[in-house]
Image (cartoon, rainbow, N blue to C red; front, side, top):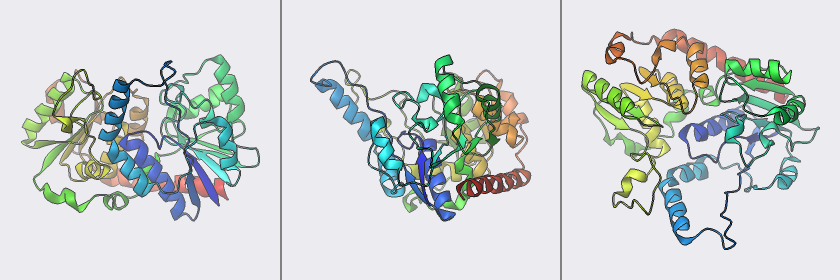
Length: 366
């Protein structure tokens, strides 16, 4: 069976790419033929009839170059992918030969993040004779961001689905109360794979780092977060290994710097190495927490108000790890009171959740 996958595969984000990889690999292992639908929103252009000016073109190309590690991963590990589709009208012919289309995971149902895609992530382009499934789809927040007009349209589209699963507990309530459809709560696709599946993606070149370290994966840096990380580093007497780029801003011609290294994103191999080999992990990222749990690491998550806490709360609640979420204003001694995580019961939960998720996929695709 040919199974289309519609998700944020084009996002230059470690979690987005690894969840795409995980769902595709899982479907392949179950005997299906996964095909990533390469639906990419068009980039906004200036009103200038001649397109972008020279400065903006240089900046655009520079920023793309600094993110080349993501393109390399796509090329090597997301091979079963369609040609690029920028227009709605081109989607129909792509899915005609598919037996089913799965949307998810990640925040595919967060309207703020799907601009330029219309309601494609609600599978508005999929004909009635093709199965429509949501796997661990996320609204991002504990409420739906769309207005009344969008709610009416989305409700009609969701009623066309053969099965719906969501990634957060709150998503079950949104589906029931707002859209009058049933949904089940399933784990993120990255948790469907075992740690060894990701270890295979780590290059042997990473092994030059032999000393113990704390891993830092912060998406939205602040002085308070940096202070927390420095404090824990000193308490544990360990160096900090950073697995995101040093700069928090995009490359700019106005603020030209010769130190280009700070703009590069680490490879996914380096990112995974930093998770796998850490003595302790500090992150404000959903997938930073997911992989900390998957690799049985001691960690804390600093609440990230910019990206929402619903996803983090739901994830930590599932594994009884609510105390690992702290806010930036916490007093430093709170870290010294945290007991070491016992992963034996957590790993059992992951096993049961995997079985539940695999059963869902097999049942809905057969």
